[in-house]
Length: 89
Image (tube, rainbow, N blue to C red):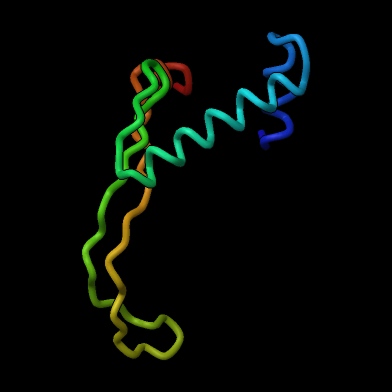
């Protein structure tokens, strides 16, 4: 399912597609903002988005085999909630 399909599904329970798009865009922007501030976002029954720091490390260029330095960075980790895990089984 892509974003347009998600909006179409949400529009079924709301009055218009515009309301559904606004709601989904707002949710995505709020989650992204929290991730930027390095905050966790927990949606009960769905899961938790976490901002996780990765340390700098050494790697290897897969084409040439030469060692390279990989910079430290923050990435997003999603941990599914119990209800989501049960729904997918």
